[in-house]
Image (cartoon, rainbow, N blue to C red; front, top):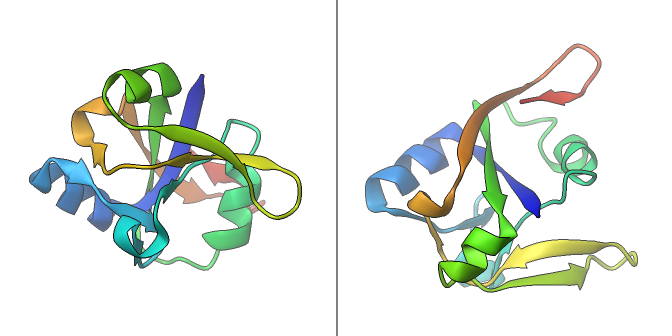
Length: 115
């Protein structure tokens, strides 16, 4: 299954240099949150609109496959976000080589995250 994580381009650049991504969400590390937030294909647009619409820094979308993550030692749990909707959470730092694609992302005039 394909899942997504929205990141700032700067956070991804830092992760790429370090070899692993450790940001849970905007300004929060995996150590602080306990996991890295991710979204299914159906969840990425609502997540982008809710949490990233006001971000002025360049964004990227990390594209991953759950099978590759689990085979690479990154546990994933689908957990309730408090509204009955299950979101994928990564319970380990993300090795950069387990990311299938890094897509530049930006909001279009309609407020949709294009990536």
